[in-house]
View (cartoon, rainbow, N blue to C red):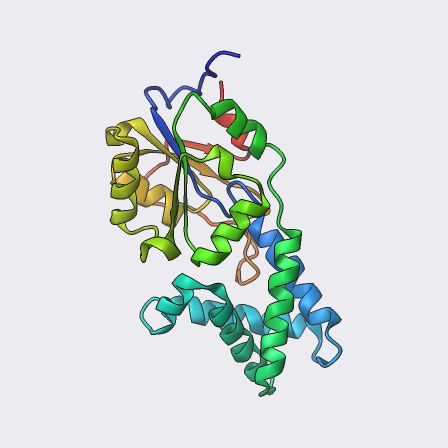
Length: 255
């Protein structure tokens, strides 16, 4: 099979980077499944599930907004265990439960169920197979080092990546420009010859554009975190820069 042709607008691309969660795999769907199973199946938790999900969403949003400025960030980079348990502890406190052991148990159940439910989008492997051997392909993903490595291994993605950049291993993540500088150096291409494919306008599209890369914004109806206040996927600000291409399926990058 010959080199596949990319769609108009992506001419001259010599290297391609993908985001991982909700670009190649359905992370938020898995997270929702994990939360429902953790809260719904625990014998010592009598709080209604809908209330637990609501309070978890609030606690999650508050924690995410501050974690990068606190001592929790260093812990988060190395492992998702401690911050996930802390989030459960804060969730339980919001419903009047002060039980460290229960928080840890819920955290572990959520982690196990989320990981079990995690799966690739149907077209992901087909797209990576078509790219392999014709372009250097890498992944740039935010998250704890251990969790992201577990996801890559579970989904059998390692053979498709020439380069792997994980926030937890670098000590910083997207949208930090250092991420894109390291990724560019790894492939040895000019900025306009590199493509970033990701689901986050804020963390994937905007910083890639600011670094001179071409961008593909993947917008799926399922891309709604359990902490979402709107229940809708991320929107582009009216004055925000335009991505090179907007798609709903990864296969749309091919002509």
